[in-house]
Image (cartoon, rainbow, N blue to C red; front, side, top):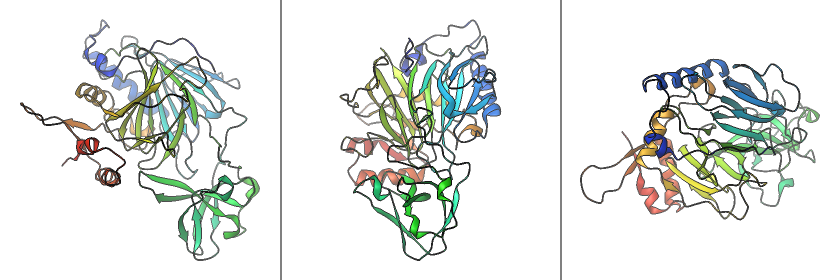
Length: 415
């Protein structure tokens, strides 16, 4: 991996308090930041699956093949060709901010657009999925017709292990969109949405003998248990300097997947599952990675005994060393999730809430609000969430004992 020297990002509370260093007035900086974000939306809107877009200057990209045209904002190319990406810090005076927009298919079915990843400013990204090993889905899914009533749908094919579970059943004549096949040719991966306690899954498997012979298995890619799409595993690092104004997002990696649907990524060697929106950044003195859940639920160490849940407004950290592979050591453990401070919520709200153009993501960025009673006393702050479905899901998770009592008491329904 390319492990260049990078300075590291200060915590959010610092950029709330750091004075402006640019000669321009404080009123100019927010305008520049919002203008550049709007331009990113114009240039990178409706990005294709597994694509990279040059959002704003400057970006330094390295590819597996020559891409001389990827030098100006608005340029697009296939994500599988990307080796590394480095953005420049926000500069209000120069009206520059290195922003990259990536569509990462991850574990999502072809029937859904991939997750949106946005690198803000002084961020380094590296593709940890070699081009020759990447899972490349077809341009369009194949439509499979179910033969008989009561056809079972499973979470994984039998070839992935002994813990296969039934997740639904289908009637004869049902149509399914298939985008992959197991190595033994006995199972099709299909778009099938089913509910789990923490979120929803959008892929399932069905036996090839359960569908009509109106599909072409040879045109489907083989999907193994460890298959990864381009950039589903990545390295990220970021700079230290605080932005010139609170309205400019700090150097960080913003990630948004489809709402309430599981998106699986490996970041710096750590397995992370999100069901909405999160922010990833390296914090000082440069030896920890922080993950912040902005909306939905983030799962750290998914599908293990060490699984940790991050509700919206909570963050956790883990050790990070950019000079080792992987940067997150297997012996490290995540910190106990903590609620962000009032200052951190304010900074996130001003920098992100409703500011990222809708054209480059699934839905509006919404930062939760922290409500703290005024006056004396020991009343605790609570978190206001405007998503009733999310609040209901969190209530079920609390009832199941997957979140501690203090965390559950922090969450409330607004309006």
